[in-house]
Length: 451
Image (cartoon, rainbow, N blue to C red; front, side, top):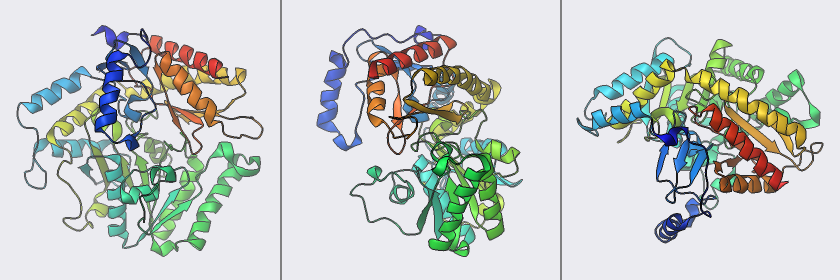
């Protein structure tokens, strides 16, 4: 085991250091500034939850490629599996040449995916955006209906359709016109429920807001699917309350609508189960279709769509698939991810991280009134910052300062939320207890400095 895997953050140069600064100059010349970066970080190598930049600075990464590295950087078993496959062949388009890694991955995925139905089928594309777009295609094809309901705070991607589905329109500036048939309801953000509603009263309010969409936007019989994230990512790490999900499931069942869960970010053990939808399945409200991506293959581009066979059987031939979906290298990496996460009980690792970090953030909340809410499901945690705990006015400025302060001390953090006032925690699930303690120490120091 390399020493980087167990290292602690250590910054030895100004950021960016000279080698990193030179790379940023090349970046500015060769790539569009619209891609954007808020960080002065480069990467030379990464292991576990840590990475080293070109100048020898060592960072603890609580962004992890925005949730791609639940299994950590450079997992040795994934490396070995990909190397072994690379000696055979890199690529075989599944529409042309049937290859075993694709089928083996579909078989394993159908075993673990918590969707309704005994017989399931899965297919693969390359990104979360593609997965969500294909879920819409499948839902429309199955139901014969045109319309989709999504939610405030949602992020579903950057393709034309998924930009429309995404709530935050800063991701779609100048990109219209957008496709029709997408309607938006209010997501159940219990921290910001109107009139300080709590408990079942808050749930009833948000269910009512969903029902209004069927009156004012799309009739029930024109709606193909209700699509949502079990824990909103870009929206600020807001969990969907279980009682609300049960109500959504009931509406779908009564009106022939499909319930689709976008687990692009919250899947792969981060929630304390392999998929957050397992909580729904246990409660009798499993989704009809599930999408997932990010940590599915440890960093190789891959995404998945899974549903019961009855739904998949109605999809018209030639309308799904693609050149690189479950490329052989990606498929064997994903198979190894499933094996390692199951064998080593990664959901338990997520719950341990949630316990350690949750206690730390709650303790900070008692000391710093600017922390309005600490929430999440498992290790998918959000810390919301406000200017006043009574008015809950969002404070994006302090979040920006905390992110920069923490980076300068060796901890990588990322902002989220409709108002950019939430810090989201996407720590790799392989982080050591010493690294978690160091992260909490840096987080509080960055917060104190910002205050």
